[in-house]
Image 1 (cartoon, protein in one colour):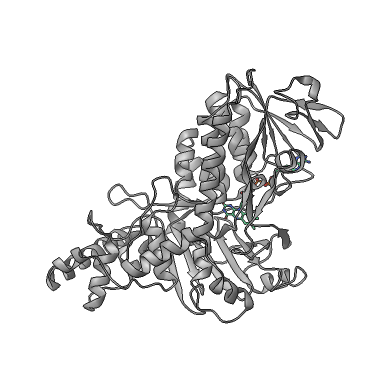
Image 2 (cartoon, helix red, strand yellow):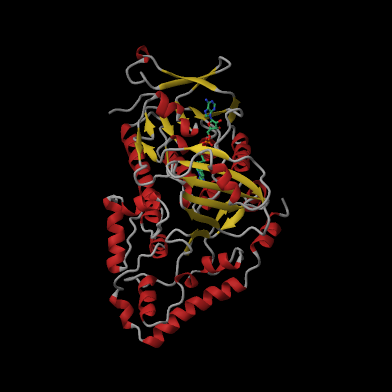
Length: 502
Ligand code: FAD
């Protein structure tokens, strides 16, 4: 095929959660002068109301939008995030940290882990985390922007305030917001011409009005009203590898200073998150409905949080997986409408960003080209499959014996892509990252070692160092990280000072 021979200037975004407004903000900033962009959302339906931890790539998105960091942080009550503390994932009582940034110094032929492994053989190595400045800063509850040896960071943010913040920017760039419920999604009839037949023509609103468009972005959340329900694009179910299918979330008042990392605490039935913002803490349980009932989950969550409840616990159902395609005809799904894997590594907002940027790169200004659609679908599929493998890794390599859930994920058949990565690391200490993958070597190494995989060998280049040289090499890296962190202010004080002018 085949290019649909018409111009695209009327874009309709269905849904105004994080996905809808991120999409609107980027598209209006880049193409606002050329396009007529309308966003439809319903206050009565509301948004999923969670999604508060991010990864460092969000800074790139904010740079593209020209966002002032302090203004954004003040508006969304954001804090800094240096990584995730995994508690009890390997085994009950055993913890590790997955930080942003890199650990130690690599040699071109071999990563730092090889030198660390050699040092361990000689009794010279300290904890792996001691060589990573982000982890040392997280545990010391310190943070600042530093010029030399900069810390890699992301944010914890209030999701509903974030959507409002982006809405303000989008409206300033000309996006028109339409309040109301979509009652039906209308498709072009056959007599509209062969190329358009079956394409989405308009959203029929409950009040009888119609919102017509050329290109439709489905940001209606798990409902997937346009792509899933109307165009009938099916869903690939990943629950065999990711058996958790529910979440219950609640917000609580802060009872201590906000720490600069997300806590992820494993339980018999799944895991719990704690995300500290400036003014409150976001909490939730992600669980398997085979291990915990929806009736009991809210009470279990209540027992595992501290501080006064600010909202009522709310159960959210989901099926891990992805739509077979995220772009079909004249409709592109972004956010939960296109797929979802649990928020263990805070990747969903990032995927919205990736989709939004990709759509701008492949924008069908002169008509939809099937090659663009195929490329978009291929890249999007790869993104989520890579993230799925990384998340499955956390579950699979465990020594927990407290429920059928942990036994199942330990014993399940792995996808070949993940099995190969684990075997390669276990046998040789090596990790390779295809260039467009989200998680880099340091992430895989920290999680694999944290979950208890110790490589059988190290690279021979590490044997070239004598004992004293290796001791100095490791000692210098550890000292640099400690000195850097000693010079930093407390995280909460730093955030307060930064946001004060706003
Ligand atoms: P939603 O927020 O559900 O928005 C859907 C929009 O569509 C709403 O505006 C709604 O009003 C509108 N809509 C739907 N139907 C209609 C209709 N008929 N008429 C009019 N409007 C309609 N991501 C992260 O990156 N980090 C995290 O820490 C994280 N934690 C999560 C925890 C849980 C338990 C879950 C479930 C998700 C989490 N996510 C996280 C994912 C993140 O929440 C979502 O990716 C993000 O919020 C985007 O959601 P959305 O905009 O696609 O959908």
